[in-house]
Image 1 (tube, rainbow, N blue to C red):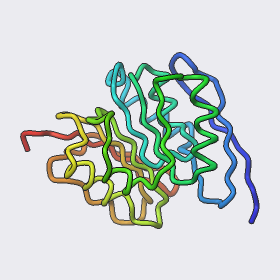
Image 2: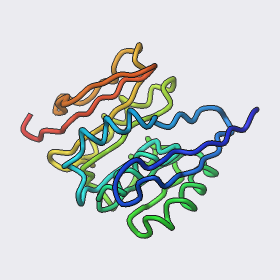
Image 3: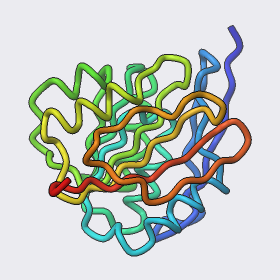
Length: 192
């Protein structure tokens, strides 16, 4: 097993240019690239201030860090691997203090528990592609009523696989693809 070390850069907001370091021991970490993050945060440009954010499959923590840097109120960061969650805590707490909550947990199990920070205004769902976790995560968010009325939900998946199934009350706002990935931004509509 090879250990890969890397970093991702916060590309906008108060902490623009700051690097987050990561260690990938299993070869399964694929941080969203600068170009796709720039596209995503252009989509979200005027929708981040004071938002309550959930980064469900955090990995490098880049999406939550980017949202916090650009004015989100707080972010809950869920990462299954304990070492990675501890590393996220060590890196994000000094930057964002009480605005970031790191949870070392399986995302689907965590969604079934008590979540005092809910409802969320913005959710990032970027799981490992081959595990089929995106659709169940979307369903759990809706069934457990963990989203605000017009929440935004970003879902990343493999470009050539069928798109994840999302609740009928979610409307597709934006879609882009690059390399092997598909990026979709949905908005929840309580009236649908």
